[in-house]
Length: 111
Image (cartoon, rainbow, N blue to C red; front, side, top):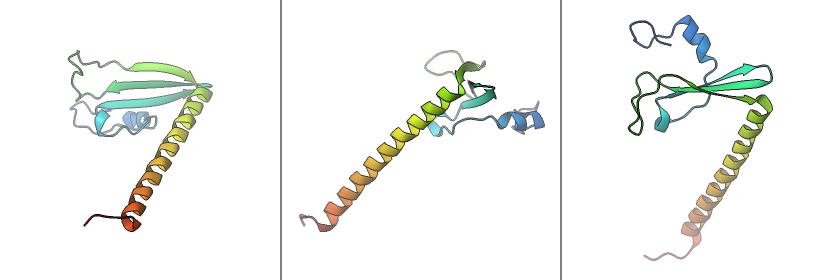
């Protein structure tokens, strides 16, 4: 995805490849690239460490991608299940935050 000089410019092929980028990881996995390639009723998930990444946990740096193929329906069901869990977790956190805020506003306080 970089030009020959490694300056990070995206070529036309790199831009096409970037269409398949999958998941926004956050800073804990900045060096990871993940892609999902649809293929009929299956999706091929591939990930690799970015070129600038180094060895993890004292192992050699891995430059080849790791690939897993799954049925589309299984991937969609898994993502939907994960979303449902995240929504329940978010609702519970909001409720706890509101409860804590309400108790500070109207509850007994020591001053």
